[in-house]
Length: 211
Image (cartoon, rainbow, N blue to C red; front, side):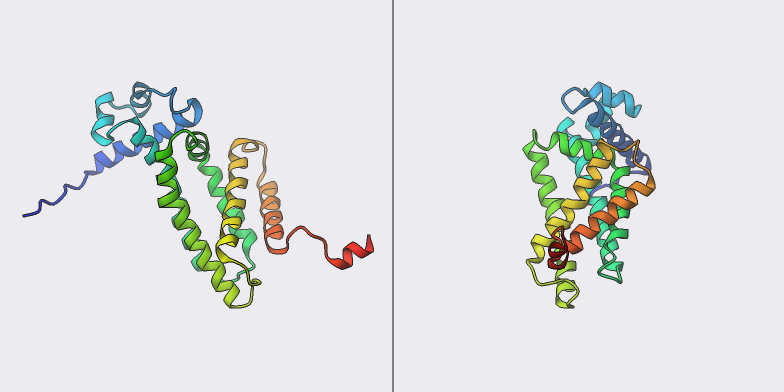
């Protein structure tokens, strides 16, 4: 008879979240290699041995920190896209997504800094997050093209461009301008990105002739 896997208790889940929160903060500020398991345990306020009751090793904590945050972003994006009534309402979506990325600044820094050094992290993010986000966005843009809202293009390419725009913009917010950028500036950036995405950067033939 197959044994049922024991569900973690609320206290175990809370401890696990504390460990992940401590890891996200320390990996973002000190880097993965410079963060010891003792650092993690101290910041999470648990015994060092407790770390290994929840995770097999420090690398497993790194991978979970990165993928957990991206899965939450994916879930939010799926909900936003499914509820959008106007296919041209890209600016509010970008503004909200960028704001949420800003809140996940530590997770973003961990991903961008550590993914280049850890192939396992790259594979996990690619397989569990990026591919799924692209699938969701591709379906959205395909529907918009079928309805004649967007011109016919490869919807997967469009999806990748769209996701890349808000990811890079969100990352710049978390690393360069997180303290200086006001809500108004964030709104202007989102509207600018939406304008570029929907209309491109090339002037119309009328504008070119006038100049």
